[in-house]
Length: 321
Image (tube, rainbow, N blue to C red):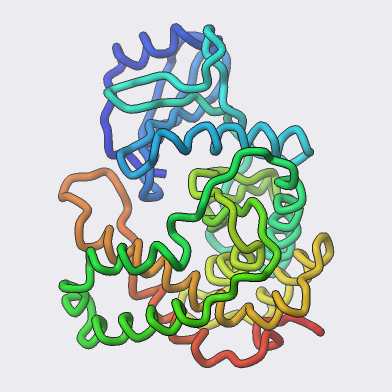
């Protein structure tokens, strides 16, 4: 979540007249994240999230995102729901951007997750994968292996400004992953961005998943590798084997990985580390001054990528086979 587009109180109040959401009491921007402009609203009928979809988001993808939330909720997954307008539409327009009102999900994200929380995340991810079955709309993953080279080319010439020798290292890594990326593993709807700030807890109980704006169709085990990267490394960059074991145990308690998926985990984890390195690198180099957004250090994911290069067996992530 982030704020790229500012809104005025008058414009927002007029926007709300199309919803059964009450009268505006207060609102504030949410600075975390990098993709859309988000605001927390309090009205006479409760709390809501207002999302303005920025230029990076293709408006043609919005029916997929909003429809997926409904599909998952109908199958028992706890996630926010878009509110319909008085004309039945799920999308409006505010400050020149497509905009949606989203129900508020109780809970908070964890700054210091423990292994027990990682187990809950693994379980919830597998439940989401199963709940996504039967969703009729599809969306290709623009940030999977086929999209990495175009993204890299936008930053390659300046990569050595971030770390000396980076241009050659990433060029070689990209070529390796393009040549070896698996194609025949089980696929379906994935979240593709299940970081700590996209999972809410009440106490130690997982209360729901949020922010489905990277969701797409891709390898299910690629989603698992994203979570290994997002949840199982410590602040000092060390991989926490206990957390990795818990996350994978939680996932497999609902949906066991196939032998082929398990073997592919090190390669998939390399790929997901590269994917987040590339988007962070691009944002690090191009986010304009003054934007109310928290830029994330790309070198964090470079270190994770280098760790995954050394892994030869999925047991090193805590997978018990």
